[in-house]
Length: 114
Length: 112
Image (cartoon, helix red, strand yellow):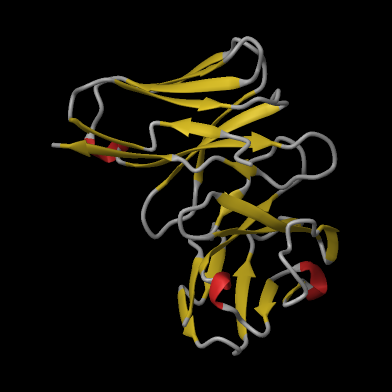
């Protein structure tokens, strides 16, 4: 069974440009999460989808970030326009259900904004 | 504010030695998880502890949850180079919000 996949693995963009990150969860997992680790800091929660609905987006830093999950399958996270402080590693995770269920993480997308 | 304090931040020891890393919080955990992350990969769940005083073993790894559910420790016996990685203490949220809260982690290097 395929795990959580993320694309691209690395992205280098200039300040002011737009970047779209993609996450494909494990098949059958209704719950999808985005997290981010900025250098020197801990991994922080961004938002949580249940199927195509945003269950909790309390961790989204500002309105330059837009997450979508059309059809309840894969998800995209768009940053527009990107700023230097957006650099970091963006992780996606999925789980079968909420509660104390294991979240399976993808390998992450390393975003560098120059 | 760092909700989860992990110590030490970095630890480098020789193969065969024993070690303990710690996770502390001023808040009570509803449940606590330990993850391990290797370079270029996402975190992978090792264990979940729920009950105060609970001890769980995973081969050479022993996880303990404090009686007051505010702290946890991970002890590795006879460390192997394959144990090298970033060990993350993670608080599982209570109620409907299911975003995990991570500590900064302990970077562990086991030298052959």
